[in-house]
Image 1: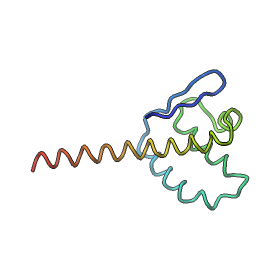
Image 2: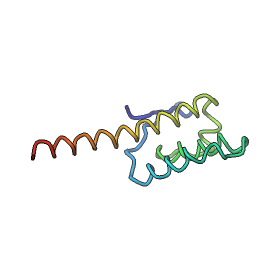
Image 3: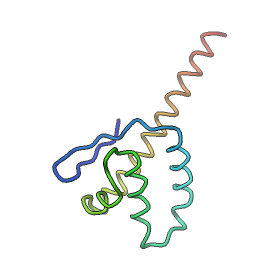
Image 4: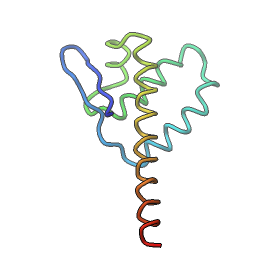
Length: 99
């Protein structure tokens, strides 16, 4: 399911991701354990802002509760991963039908 967030009184739906976001998500997910504590939520907000058109890191930090930031990040990661795995399944099905 496509992630959504509400900022103020407006609801935003995540934009269909380009391939680069997968690389950024993977790199961030591996490196986030090394972030200083004071940068932890800011860094998550940067990633979240990349998938919502018209939303900034500051919008995320100012409008979402702490637990919503982490949950939204996880929703985004799971969503992008599911897009990739669903396409891999389609490719394998086509290959099976052609064999």
